[in-house]
Amino acid sequence: MKRMLLLVLITAVVVGGVFAAGQKEQSAQKVVTINFSSVSVPGDAHTEAMTVFKNELEKLSGGTMKVNVYPSGQLFDQEGEQAAIKQGSVDMIYTSAPWLAEFVPYLSMFTAVYTFQGYKHMTKVLNGEIGKKIFADVVEKVGIRPLGAYYLGTRELNLVEKVGPVRSPADMKGVKLRVPGSPSWIALGKALGGNPTPMAFSEVYMGLKTGAVEGQDNPLPTDKNAKFYEVTKYIVLTNHVVDSVWPTMNEKKWESLTPQQQKWVMQAVDKGRAFCDKKVLDTEANILGFFKKQGMIIIDDPDIAAFAAYAKNSYMTESKDISKDWDWDLYNKVQAAK
Image (cartoon, rainbow, N blue to C red; front, top):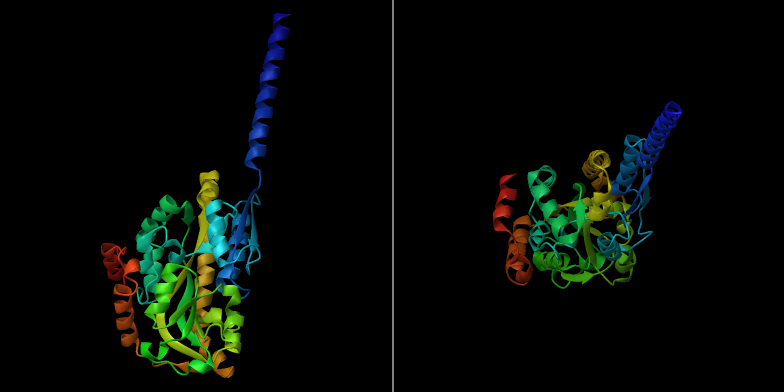
């Protein structure tokens, strides 16, 4: 009788252990869903990089992680998605220094014109040790986690025919220059000599067409993909911002992932970055011919020194509420990383 009771108890323990292991395995296999939102348009490298990220993460995780991508402002406009990521209403978006400077003030120096001298300088800084320090500050102060920096392209001025050719900041006086609606972006518009006019990205095409704005600045691939060449006449090669966007996850979502899942996410982010950066660089190398065929006029000899000097004075005077928060020690480290 005792032997029979012992066998029953052993069987119960074994069955219980198997059941618990099965529960644990089932829990481990539970699919984690990540919703990734962007206002970027089809054809943009960082739009396509969302799908690269999705495919790589789903492959690495063996299907235990799923990514839903929502480009073209399907879920939120540009301002709305910045609030949504902080609230946890969406898991991932693209953000960048201008959107975060309100909460981490020294980041406004990364929105300033001529901070970076080219793509290699930018990616070395933001995807290196300096970037890790910046991203950690964002986590602490905003509750969202930048996972890297993708090359968006080098921003150039793009103007309607009414403005005429621009070669110096003086030529920009009074020009209604579209900017996103944040203090750092408005400061950038002033630094270029224009009259900054906040407007959502989704409204820019019609704004240029109707005259609500007379110019905008974006990397050339974005100008092409958003078809701004249909409603503008001039591209001025000011090369004023080597721009990036930062794939960013809500911190609570990040913390809910296991260390292995976090590793997979970072590997997928790196795969997306390699794709995005190469596509933008390749496009920039060949895109001016396209705009010329559309009848646009390329101003390739603006006075860069004059633009840089004007911008520096603008940040120190009319936008001193922005520049007062700059971390000059960090700025010098950035410049030393060229």
